[in-house]
Length: 269
Image 1 (cartoon, rainbow, N blue to C red):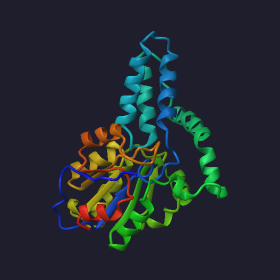
Image 2: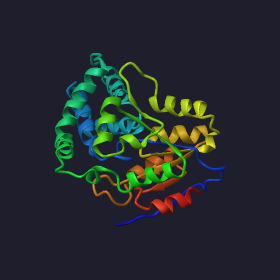
Image 3: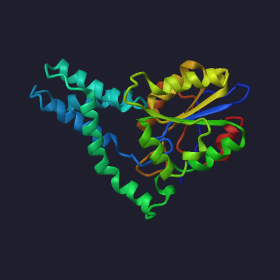
Image 4: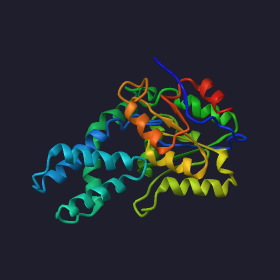
């Protein structure tokens, strides 16, 4: 078991009042491996156009936009797929149809996990990022208001948060994707949080494994902690995630939350 904190920029603010968490890959491992569903499916759609392109090139293109849009609502990745299809002379398809098929395929991968949690055959700790529940509780105890924002559909986020025992920990609410909303939901949550809580940006700390929430927080002047969990093993750093989070502007990189006391100390909490 390994734990280390990589500090890129020391926190020098007056203290945090609010914390924003991503869900999938940051707190929950229920959807671990979703990329292995989305990327092959998207490649399959493009290859079916019969353009005779190199398969590796298609995979590289799809992987790039899937990674870049990780953290935004799933529909944005499906919009990017539709654009890639149309650019090649294929027919426009409602991105919502691509999303439905992706979610259908994903469900076959994760159904046993959810069923296991529902039945008690699996413990919430089996599918939560190490130390995450205890860490959120520690922030709450320190008087920091906690918010959850996810690119996954809101109804699913609330349900899956209940399965791993974190639903009631977010006194700032749980915010997920809504069908009618095509703006970046995380950007809206962050801006509303700053306005409604009357925050200086330096009073916000964000924890996430996606490019979007880290970049948004960094640009707004908050403190961005990249959670580079190796989802397969649950321990250590995923170097691909780390590189993505660094390029997004992360101020700190952690592998998970098991070192709660060390993280709190590093954040001056």
